[in-house]
Image (cartoon, rainbow, N blue to C red; front, side, top):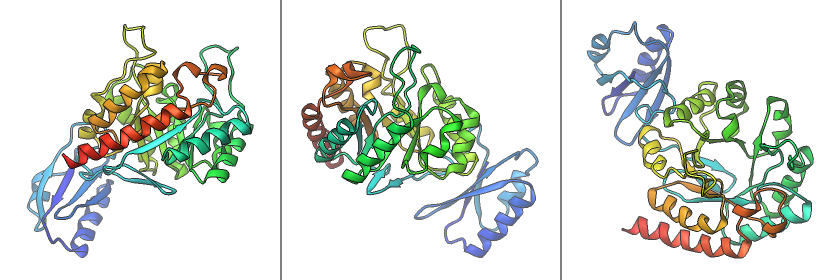
Length: 335
């Protein structure tokens, strides 16, 4: 349920309404716009009499919301959520570029790539320390050592870092990581999501291989319901009958999720395509569709990469792409 307040409602009047809502066992979430204030009610609103609230002096309208996600719902929060990480801004019309290797392989490798992508205007460095792999015999990442090396790259370049968590037992290792990534396989690991709700750190939440928009938003809701509103949604392609590409990028996820939710939406073209040659085209399509950012795999020697080399761009190609993306973003904003 949302309560739309009349313009010029005072702080004292809002407090009275807040106290009334809390007395019914509900949690109020207030979103203040330029001309309008909206109060979202989280909890069992079945016992609330809409008519009695509608008649209150400072209430313009009351509406029930059918969707099960409340905190992530744009009806609760009409303005875009903007998340700040270091000098990077995610959401609110900006284009955030996140780039780096699929996995951290050595200190020389991660620092070299970090320096290259920073020159190309990247705001956030990505790199996998823990790697979920289909085969138990494949490279699983450097684990704790990988996080240490990623933080060395952060120290060297000043770029904030994002890396993927696999299990609750690893949470303490992420104390100095700026953004915690939840991968597609963990999108519905609800116990992990609850704990990330307590973490206070931004969470980059990737859509599962076969999950709906609502299921993705319900996973975001888990994080938000436990106190953390800094969630970034990531579309990384879904599994379809097509096998030519690694996955099928659902570009319609950008406008759909932005209509349903106020959370930032970014695209991962690398995992969607699985083929480096296709990454630039999918990246351009994402920007044209209104994505808030991109997370792209870049490796200094893809042929020797320990995982996902086929979908990784070399620094020079990424630099060319970054320039094109900024030109396209400016053209869209000026149109």
